Length: 76
Image (cartoon, rainbow, N blue to C red; front, side, top):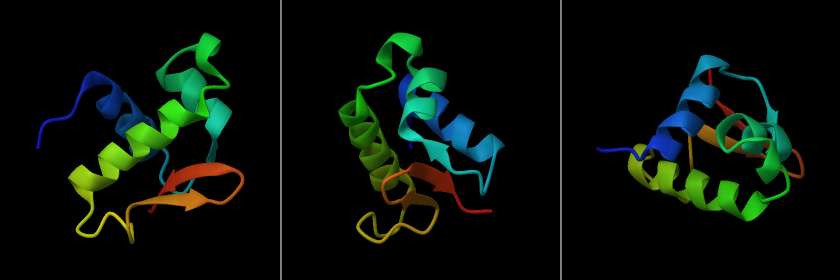
């Protein structure tokens, strides 16, 4: 499996802090930079790409989870 630099940055941020719920804005700032803090669609697209590459069943993720209305986290 090959990850793009953005996919890797997103996965790295989540994996370095397992169990920590990242808001959409926090992940966007960490991975894309401060000017992207409101571009939530970018985040949805890349989380979907990571899930397709990492999850056995991307429709029922077990590793990268969504906290509805807040953001994403990686399971410990």
